[in-house]
Image 1 (cartoon, one colour):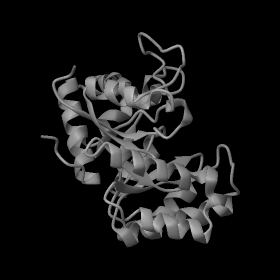
Image 2 (cartoon, rainbow, N blue to C red):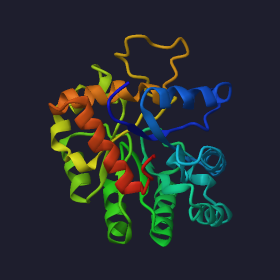
Image 3 (tube, rainbow, N blue to C red):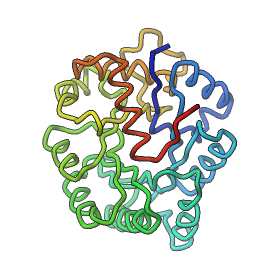
Image 4 (spheres, rainbow, N blue to C red):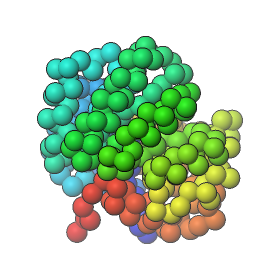
Length: 268
C-alpha cells in the first residue's frame, strides 16, 4: 500500500471481461490504494452502464458520457439527445470518450469529425470537461479542438502516447495529460519516459485504460492478460521514476489534479 491515494481516470469497467468479478476488481483497486475510479463511457450503452455503476458505488466510481470515434456512426440525433440528458447527471464528471481515431478507421473520418464537434458542443453546454481520444489524427484533432477550446471547461488527452510536439500542443491548450501502462512497454513506450518531466505536476493524470494496456513489465502478470485498476500503482511508480519524484509525491499531485479537473470529492 502506498502512502497516498491514486485515482484511475480511465477504466473501461463496462467491458464484458469484468462481468464475472467486477466487485472484486473494485475491491482489489481500493486495497491497492486506488480509491476512486472513472468508468469510461464509449458508447450509449457503456455510458448507461457506467452511470449505473457510479450510482451503486457513490464517491468511489464516477462516469463519463460519450461516444468513442470507433462508434461515431452510432451518434444519431436521438443518441445525442440522450447523451445530453445523461451528461447532466451528478454521476457524470466528463463528456467523452470522444475524439478521432485514424489508426483503425472503424467509422468514416468525416463522421468521426462530426461526432467530435457535436460532443465538444455538448460538453460546452453542460459545463463539464472532455475525455479525449486521439490516435494517428493529431492535426485534425487539434484543429477541431481549437475551434471549441474557449468554451470548454477543460479536458484530458486520455492515454497519451504521442511525441514532444503533440505534448506541447496539448499543454498549450491547457489540457491535462493521462498516462497509462504504455509507458511500461520498452518496445513502444520508451519515448514517453523523457517526456514525463515536461508535464507540469498539476496537469499529469494516471489511468489504466483497463482491460487494455496491461503493463508489459508487471512482475506477475495475470493469466487473463486483463489490465485492472489495482495495477495503477505500478504505472505510477514508473512515471515517478521518470520524473525524478517519489511515488508518494507523484501520486499526490496526480490525485489532486484529477480532483481539480473532474470535481471529484475528497474521501473522508
